Length: 117
Figure 1 (tube, rainbow, N blue to C red):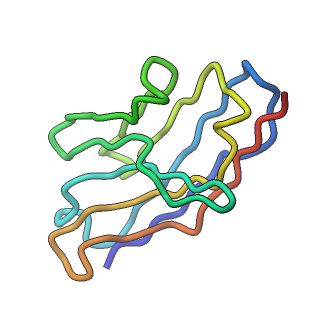
Figure 2: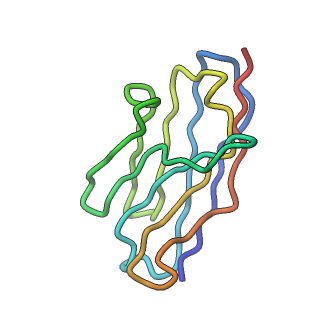
Figure 3: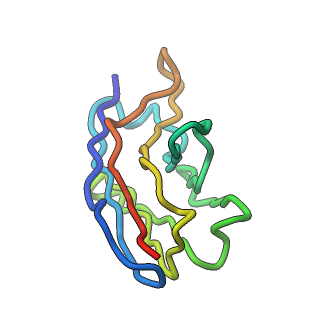
């Protein structure tokens, strides 16, 4: 099993920055990637950014150049640095772990990010 706990959400004005953190615990050696997804009201949950155990990253086109995902393996923590925030970034942000251990996909409880115009 893998447990994920997010923190760092909040309310900021457009153009501002936030950093989300996700502390992971459990069977970490079976985790192959950590990522961030977001879900706005009435919309599906979409990938924001992902980082593999080898450090390969990928981003949604809408956040490229503004968001940066990173991980501290010594702390089993993944971060999402969000800059130049826009109102359309408003959503609940979820931490995700891809694992070789059933059920293969784990989720945190989510953290609300609200960007005011």
